[in-house]
Amino acid sequence: MMTNISVLVSGRGTNLQSIIDAIESGGIAGAKITAVISDKKDAYALTRAENHKIPGIFADPKSFSSRQAYDDHLLSILQENKTDLVLLAGYLRIISDSLIAAYENRMINIHPSLLPSFRGLHAQQQAVEYGVKFSGCTVHFVEPALDGGPVILQKVVPVLDGDTEETLAARILVEENKAYPEAVKLFVEGKLKVDGRIVTILE
Ligand code: GRF
Picture 1 (cartoon, rainbow, N blue to C red):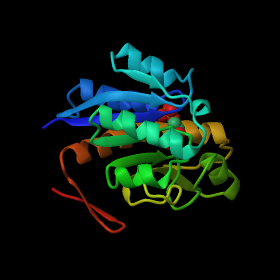
Picture 2 (picture 1 turned 135 degrees about the horizontal axis):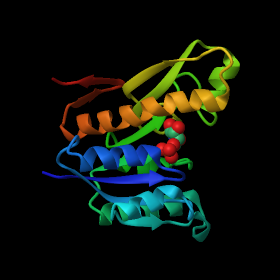
Picture 3 (picture 1 turned 180 degrees about the vertical axis):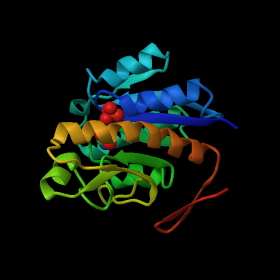
């Protein structure tokens, strides 16, 4: 059985790239990215998709009258592509509850902090300003609460004296690009058991 993956993006797509690479190298077996969907026309992630012969789709939010109408359109694209798993990889729009519900426990996001600390935008800057000594990244299932779903994996990095948003973001990104393919591999292999908020990794 092949797991069909669709990836929602808005920007440069390093996390998308890490998953493409893991699939192409055989690190993740039994999965295929069938669509990369962007809400931004010039997202470099679309170029990455094209470079790997993966269909890239620009869905323009301006062509829709509401978030619901836009997300209904996304859902139809996901269904046309027979999507089993939706990955958010630097996708910057809030997603409507109906779209999240359609992919309950089958939609995953990555966030650049140790949740539940520093939800929302500029998580790395929030961490620097708060003065925490460790931060990192979280891969989690998506629920309607922003950055609030069950945690799959976290990776920790130190916050060093003199760190800026940029230097901390770069240190976290190295771990993101490892954590996301790891989590996708576990999902594809059927090793994630979700019970309420608790995700157990099966042997
Ligand atoms: C990452 O920091 C991710 O955690 C956040 O958005 C950024 C996307 O980076 N959600 P990229 O587009 O995958 O390079």
